[in-house]
Amino acid sequence: MQKEFPHPIKAIMTNENGASTTINGWLQAAGTGLPVLDAPCNGRAHPTGSMGSLNLSEVDGFQSLQSYSGGKADKKVEGFVSGALDKSSNAVRYMSVEAGGMVAVCRNPVTLGYVKNHAAVGGISQAIELGEAFLSVPEGPERIEAVASFLKGRVIHSGKVRTFNLNQTGGFDVGVVKIDDLELTFWNEYMTAEMNGERKGTFPDLIMTFDAKTGLPLVSAEIQEGQSIAVLSVPKENLKLSSTMFNEKLLKAVEPIIQKNII
Image 1 (spheres, one colour):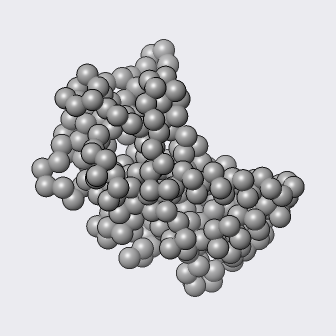
Image 2 (tube, rainbow, N blue to C red):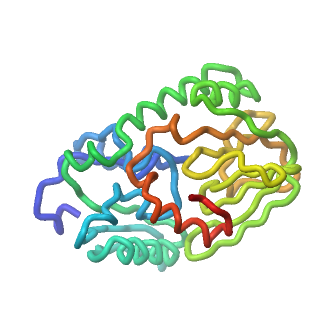
Image 3 (cartoon, rainbow, N blue to C red):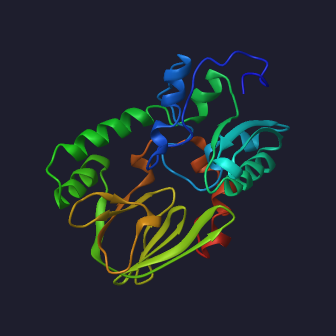
C-alpha cells in the first residue's frame, strides 16, 4: 500500500469491531511501529465492504486503493486494486474466495479529519470495556447477562435451535436460524430477529447468539441444530457506529439478500 500511495501512512485502524476483526492491524502496527487508532471504520461487524468504508461510497469520483494477500501454496494470491469502491471491494472478495475464503486487506487511506467525522471513534475502548465486564463473572449464563447489562440490551429468547440453514454465496454466509418461535436471518452477521412475526431487532442493532450453558458467544457459522442458545439484542443507539450505518442506500442492499425489510 505504501508503495502505491503517494503520502506517508501515519496510523492503522481496523475495518470493524467483530468476532476477531477488532484486532485487525494490531500485528501490522507492532511490525511497522505505527499506532492503532481507537476508531474502527465501523463499531460493529457488517457484511459488505462499503459498510466498512466510512461513507466513501458517497464521495464523488472516489478511487479506492486496496492491497490484499492470502492463501497458501497453489491458492496463494496477492495484489493491488484501484477503482470504484464497489468494484474494488468485489474484486478483493472474489480473490478471497480463490484464496480459500480469506485474505488480509489494507485499503482506502484517508485523512485524520475524515476519520473523526465518519469512523466509530472510541469503538475499541468500548470493546475492551465490554470484554472486562464479560470476564468479570464466572463462566456461564451470568456472562450473557453481564453483556446485556453493559450494552443496555436484553436477552430476547433462550431455547434450542430447531433449524439452521446456511448457504455460501459469493464469499458470504446467508441463512436462517430458528430457535423455538424466534427466527434470525443472517448475511454473515445477524440482520433481523422476529418472534411470531414481531420484530425484536434489526441491523445495525446488535443481534448476538451465545451458548446458553457456557455463556460464550457463537457466531452464525458455528450454530448447530439442537444447541441450547441465548439471543441478545442491543439497540444501535448503544453502540459506537460509523456514518455508514445511517446510510439508507447501503442498508437497503441487505433487503433482497435476506428477503426482509431493513429500512
